[in-house]
Image 1: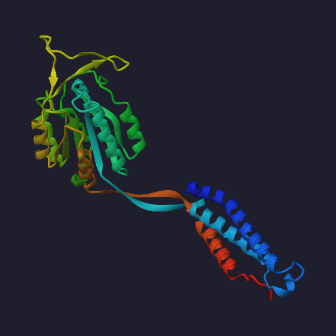
Image 2: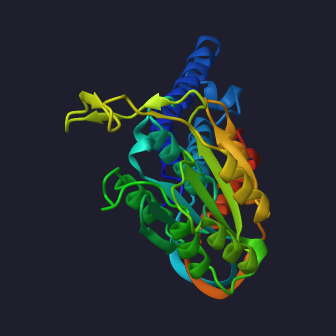
Image 3: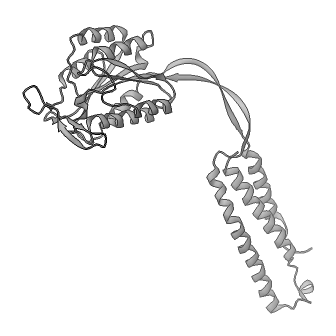
Length: 330
């Protein structure tokens, strides 16, 4: 098994190199034949073409061994004891209908998913979980170190997967506090992603609980102050209509950042706003990467044993042999 299999493609150039070396030997032989006849060659010249063949063969072997070393052959296993350190990040994603608004392209929800994907990618090795919420909340993905599992659960996030509409912040905050209770405060954080239209009277109590637990909340407001209507689409993605109020007037959903700023400030976090396609995501990721890393004890990991040293040694021997092997007869 090879760790860098792509380097094995270089072996395709070995036959070409062999042809070139054979060509140069033949050319030298032909040039000498113009000056010295074949019968007199052993008497008038000490050049050994058999020596050229040996040198070229050894040279080709050296390149083959070098390419195999670059490909990093591996066989056998070894166990290594490592100390696992990581941060713990709860991502709470608003999936109320207002997140379908398209003042942020392609939509607030899709932009939020892009942000979460960036967090999963750049915070690899950290423990991550996803809570989805609207009128209630639930774990979409429990806390895990498995980044691929988090990505899979993220793909399944859709508007309407929860039975109650509206937006309530207290439920996801309380879920996060419960999940991270007793962990070192500097190594854990909650990322609250929403357009900020909270309809919850218990948010203040939830924020107090987060403060007592030392849970830092990084709030992310997604949307614009101008707002946009909330589309309703069919299964093929075709627009049917826009959401209207009791009077039949089209509802304009606008970013409400006031409460989100307060939540971040009171819990020692930061507020970020995604109102265009600027690079805010990188700033959010950087904030999470700056969290403390808590020790989770030592674990044993099995890894394949590298054996490239053998082929590298053989390559060096081959090149050295080619260098010192005599060209002439004695």
